[in-house]
Image 1 (cartoon, rainbow, N blue to C red):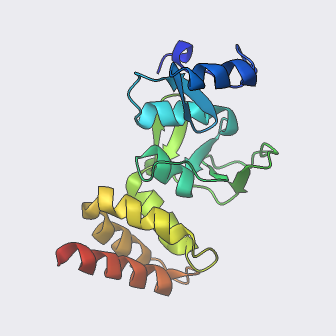
Image 2: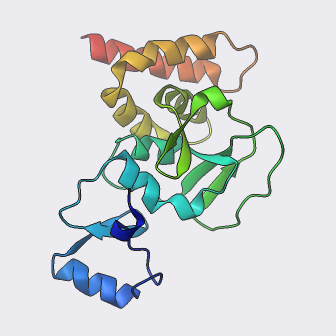
Length: 184
């Protein structure tokens, strides 16, 4: 997406000017940014709206990746970012960012606009495994599984092949329940 179509508060226009343009119908809110009202919202525009929160060497993951891939209308309240390189990186300190230091394999990451984002299948795996610590992830898992029902089986198989993975029993049960709902 061309950066001329993305308006971050206080970058080119103040928040008051952006709010006035939104009230006039010229702009709409998208994540942390504003875009022209006639611009199609898709994965590239969603990724661009949070690019300032995803540092080099990291990838949007979890609910943030689900939202970028098209699950849900509103972005998550806190964005999730995972390390996408083998070496350790110093995370950006931001109150709306949750940084996960466990590395994501390069094969599980895809570039969207100017940032890296976990693939749909990896995002389903991460959301399912996260259910044991945060049941609110189920909303994102359901929405993403609805968009890509063909990935549920592969995500379940990926989790089943891992030994001693925390939350794997609950994750597999949740994915089986989603698969059963889709096949009815």
